[in-house]
Image 1: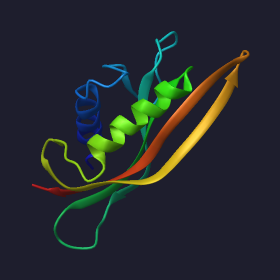
Image 2 (image 1 turned 60 degrees about the horizontal axis):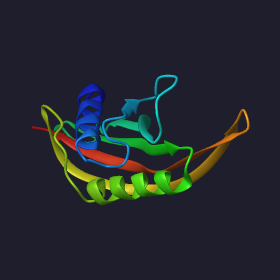
Image 3 (image 1 turned 60 degrees about the vertical axis):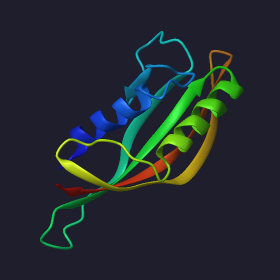
Length: 130
C-alpha cells in the first residue's frame, strides 16, 4: 500500500507551509520536550479500494496542531485546512485524486496542571496508481 509514500507527502506539504509550527511536523507523536506549537498526523482508517482492476487507495489521516496556547492551535489548524482541503500534494508513485477535510475536532488535555490545545481535521486522501 501507499502509507509510507503518503506520510512522506503529508510531511513535505505541512513542513513547507511556513505555518506557526514551522517544520515541527511529526508522524504519530512529537518527541518529548518539543516546543509548541507543533503538528502531528496519523493514519486512522482506510486502505486499498479493491473495487476495480486499477489500484486505488482511500486513506483517512488525522492532522492536528498541538499548543499550550489556544490561538496557536486554531491558527495552525486553519492554515493546514487552507492548504489541504481540495488541495494537492505529491505522493511518490501515486496520483492524488482528492484531499478533503472531513471531520473537524477540538480537544484540550490537562497534563500536570497545563492545558494542551489540539485542533485539526480528519482528511480523506484518495490516490490512484500512476
